[in-house]
Image (cartoon, rainbow over all chains, first blue to last red; front, side, top):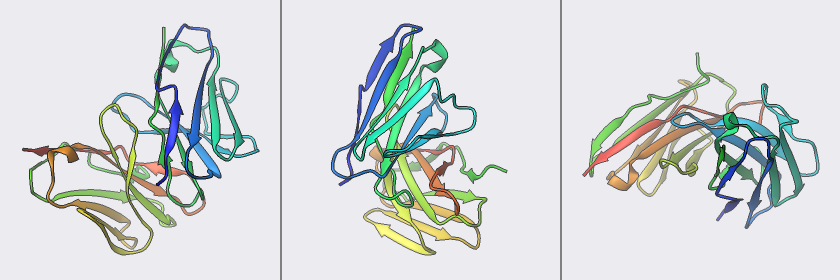
Length: 115
Length: 111
């Protein structure tokens, strides 16, 4: 199988605080991990692509200083939402792939609510 | 023109029928094609991947790819109420490792 976990599954935080979301590939080494966000009834929006040991590549319009991504090992990537605001409230989903040209497997997602 | 297009639905089929989901894409250089199922409030789950022209079958699911027509489809045989979900078509372009997603088709299987 190809299992990807995310933690936490749900988080509520106050405006101005930072939140860290972890994404782990449990049974394979992920050369590349991707971070998406999804608004209700909308499709997935790719935020950034993360390769182990190198800087993440952010999509146009995504603030790299606000959404900090670290890919420290072949099984772990983290997304930190800094100085969160209510408009950052969303469903954040990571995916991981053994080889970036083949299947991506998604984590269960993290629902962030900023009050 | 959107890069990956799907009919948003809802597509309503009776239990036991064949559900046919369609997707077109604009990048002729696309190499990899995927179908994901997403239940409401959950993350996408990979159903099928297909890389070459023709049909690929896995249980009740058949993916069909026609690169000349830039068309990929998913057939679900013997549809069950538990198949009710949004089905996302995803395409990887020829020069990138990123997936481009369609907006998804909502499938409703009526018992």
